[in-house]
Image (cartoon, rainbow, N blue to C red):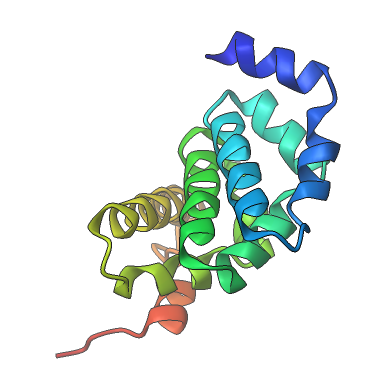
Length: 155
């Protein structure tokens, strides 16, 4: 829960987790991603702490390049942040380039991780719809990014 997560954050664990994300051992990367995914399932202040620790660039790199089992955990961490994060936090993840690696997971043969990726993309698109209504343009700014990343089926 949020209280247990806060205890971990109060112990300054994020810098150690960031260091573990660059370990040459895949199993260590996977476990660090799993731990971070539990933190990003917390509240917005806890997600912001992960942002402030500069962990998301490393997570997105893992999402693009690591072994599948580690990419799964990184996807959970990012999707959790899009689920509970503020509009600004979600925009930050988009600016870091989370859309393409999430789209890349849509073709894997693991239905659970496809669902995780879809949830993250849905959260991003939902924010885009709010922005489209607010701006009056009716244009979701994130649709084009997903189309570029995954390709749009016109048929």
